[in-house]
Length: 332
Image (cartoon, rainbow, N blue to C red):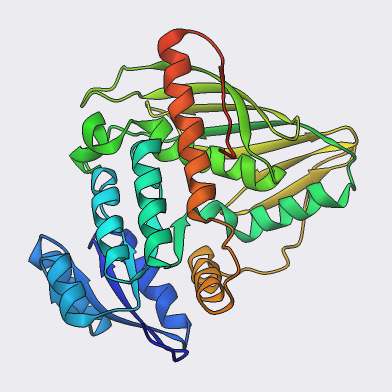
């Protein structure tokens, strides 16, 4: 691996999220994107031309040829484990898009491979890096509104659109529907804000989607290891999109829209809070990755942390199937 402060980065997957990664990499002088691979050569070539990269259709050939320091994995969920384990074996530090994998067993395989290869593994749970989320976490920790007693997280987004790649709607490839994809964000957000882990969860889901075999809604009731109760309500059916997290304290309330801002009420009308910074979450995520590589400081979204999100999701599916609450040991 390179001992200099410049790290060569190769991107595996040429979907729309590639732009977020490539733009963020350009901001960091210590990072240099060198190549991209996608089985659809036309996709790889579009990004290669726009960002002056080498294009490949086979990620293994790309890694063997380019010898990058960092591999960014932005593939369909069912390919995460195989690709991450292989890249770790080649000595690449890894930035792996969320969710980490389909199951806890697959997460364990990825963790074991990264540990054996002594490479850094960061999973792209971007809720850790949104400026409004950081401000909300700061508000909670300040005690300004008293103890946090509950969280209500609501997410509505038409999920069964023609534009969505079909693998998202096949449980065998995606791991699930709106819970696995968007619910991972909600669980991550709650754990991040409360500096805790989900330790109990109850779930109810429906499958009224017009395409595929995944759930189109999920309602979760959970508690965290710090004793905060939370609800997550998500619908992938028709209706106006909504992404809102309400924080309920003994001395007031806050409304968090991660991509827009934080509003606080201390008994009167809600007023927007000024944000400490407006930096793009992907830029912050790569800062975290570089810091871990150079200083051996565990990233906020480490592999072990990302495993806890899968533990909660796996327990939620079991809760729905069994009609009973599930307990979780998130630190195991």
